[in-house]
View 1 (cartoon, rainbow, N blue to C red):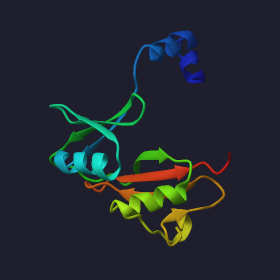
View 2 (cartoon, rainbow, N blue to C red; view 1 turned 180 degrees about the horizontal axis):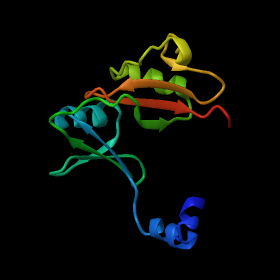
View 3 (tube, rainbow, N blue to C red; view 1 turned 120 degrees about the vertical axis):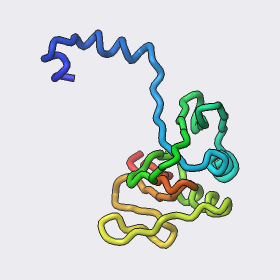
View 4 (tube, helix red, strand yellow; view 1 turned 90 degrees about the vertical axis):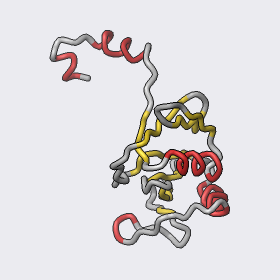
Length: 142
């Protein structure tokens, strides 16, 4: 924000611009039909479809846009995090729907359930049908 102020843009001008707009994230997939099935059936999210793609509603009216891309390449980073109250329960319930959690060794080592615990938020990563990385995480710092 200081760089904006130094460049002549007043703080009030910047903050009011974002008060009137809705922000959302988006990511690509290679197959909208498979994505719709996964996010609605396996994850239990509200999903709407339009000519341009899918909109997920993980909480309230805050949407995430998913669009088709013929030359889609899965993201090498987490594209969507779901904050949960109980990570053990979330992992167990998602496993029942067929979701498989990633297992990692080394710096971000996960346990046998696929949960990484290091004193920060507990987090478990899984992939959507297009290979994008998603996660459930629990803030252990309550």
